[in-house]
Length: 203
Image (cartoon, rainbow, N blue to C red):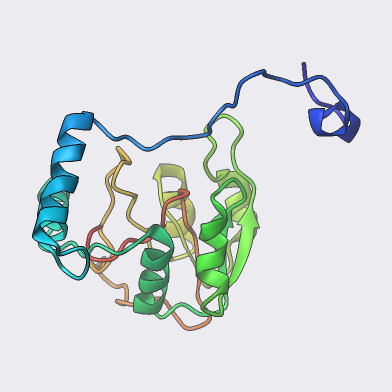
């Protein structure tokens, strides 16, 4: 049943759409035995934070998978986004998808940037290129095939995709011919996925 008004929602007396909790996503743990063994190793070493052996191994494996020289692990994606925003020298407004985790906007607003929400394509759940074009100003960067053409027409840079994305893009930090290593001041950056748009050296 399609919910057409507020009164159709179960919260306000309408029939429930499902009887069991439906999770949007869940963590991939893998084999419980392997997970338990790793946790036990960490506890036995009594080294729980600050560049432990497991962190270094994780960074090495991610670097190898992405074929990059460096990877720096942080406590969560929110912190990662803030580090990237500072590294890029972003100021002003940042275009983000309206369908995203709240941390995408929080990470930016907490460091003085203004998130600008852009509608997503209902078929893909990612930014709608037509809507993106409406958001673009002389201070915008973007990513993906059609977005690449939009970005090119506005002389903007492309942000690299997240780790699990099948797309390939020029990693943040590498610069195309004729482009500067940092976006202009009062920058407006386009994040093309819910996970953190440009990535630090792990991208």
